[in-house]
Amino acid sequence: MGNRDIKRIGILTSGGDCPGLNAAIRAAVNHASLTYGWEVVGIAYGTQGLRDRPPKAINLTVHGMNIRGIDPLLSFGGTILGSVNKGDPFDGGVLEGYHELGLDALVAIGGDGSLRILHQLAREGNWNLVAIPKTIDNDVAMTNRSIGFDTAVNTVTEALFRLTSTAASHDRVMVVEVMGRTAGHLALHAGIAGGADVILIPEIPYSIDNLYRKLAELHDRWQRRFAIVVVAEGARTAEGEMLIQENGKERFEMPRLGGMGQYIADQLSHYKGDRALETRVTVLGHIQRGGIPTALDRLMATAMGKNAVDLVAQGKFNHMVGWRASQVVTVPIEDVFNNSPALVDPHGFLVRTAHALGIYIGELAPDITSLPMATVAKV
Ligand code: F6P
Image (cartoon, rainbow, N blue to C red):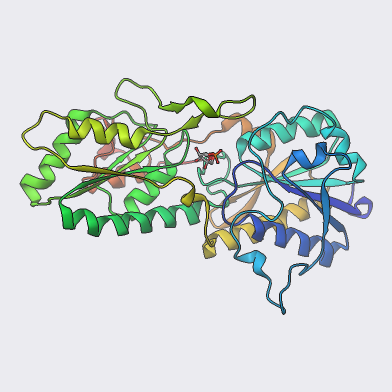
């Protein structure tokens, strides 16, 4: 299908929200209508909007949300279209919804789980699909960054800064639980940027003895009476288990993670070492998903939204736009699934940077410091 056959495209957001989604929607709508003269239809609540009868969708127009000439979509967090990350997308007339809306193509903004489902729907329903990656977990493969990650890193970094002064005032160990599911990118980036003393991530096992030793060393060698310990929600216990909250389980819904921060704090406070540690736990939770997108997230979202529309114009379906070396790239969606989730490389340059700075990041391979710095951390 070439550019001249396209008249009407749909756009939806799927999975957990994050800052920058509206900026991507805005860019896609403006480019599709101004450059190509297409109609754009926003589908409500991801694939749920396609299941409703009639399908739940609204026409999106250039600067449609202007308030006295100001376009708030660039800087609004969340998604004006709504999103869901549960339910059975194969249930009921989702496939037909696309055709009922008279769509010639669909731009889907989602994480790797949503994009995998959408790709399957596209195959079964004969849809023309183009994808844009988003997630604060940053675990979508074939792109260095997904929309929302940079903002979340900044949010966590600021929280660590705020916690440092109160930790120092009370001589406490502040344990901070950070989102990210099975990937430690958010904890690692923010932990380094926020000056953490310890970063525990799912990809690297830890030892409670060495964690305690690190905190004791801070005190004895550097006269530091407080510490900041960043724990990814998906970090595993020393026995290799993840802490899962059972109540949130449904079909097509990932188990909810949580409690690892408290678990580590309890282990530290009951540790039979020379020094009793006073711990406090902060679970940052959904604060990490909100807020004003950073300039980088807005820039990336805008460039990705524009390029996704160009892919539709070129008839290049079943592809995702990505971000590498400050450029938008195009990758086949199947390559994304085959390599997702993209986890932290335990030999990567960020892990080695943390280690070199004396941050305890778990039980690393003994040769970690001698590896060449050029090892690619992700993709
Ligand atoms: O995938 C994004 C994410 O924020 C994860 O980091 C977190 O585990 C999960 O979503 C939380 O999901 P929910 O919004 O359903 O609680």
